[in-house]
Image 1: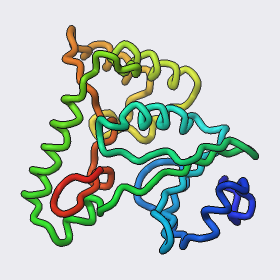
Image 2: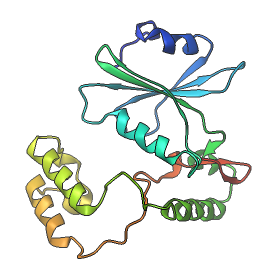
Image 3: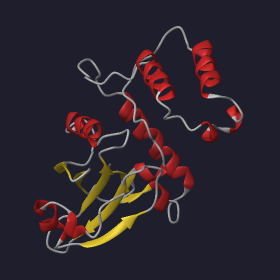
Image 4: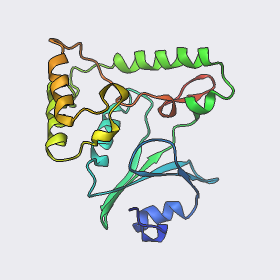
Length: 204
């Protein structure tokens, strides 16, 4: 559980929070708690809080955002702190609104075109020196590790795999594994809330 109130956070984070209005974000499936910090005197931020006992760590996310600086319009990591059984990551705000919010005022066809253009940009990043390995062999090993350690929720499979065991799904994945891979840089969670628009173009 996230330690609240915010007085429990490290001093460096509290100093920034103290000048901001705080809005908790409820969109998304992440186990992290996410807060928008809005300020009239400085730029806005997002604060993500995660229990250090969880499976995932912000460190992987930080490494990717730092590598992507100058390659894609991604947030900057202002601060990362791990203490008191939780980790906190403070990010700059990418200006604009999400594609999900944009659907209220923008034609769906235009949003689809922008999403396609954004995906094209991501897939054309030069991966010659990319330090992140997400090839199928790596992902299958990770999936097997999650299954072996009880991290797989067998009640949460998609409709096609409802009623299957984790072992059966793994066997299914191995059987369907393609013989070759066309490697590109990928987003991992490319969806409406994760693409930001400003002035009719992708801003982040």
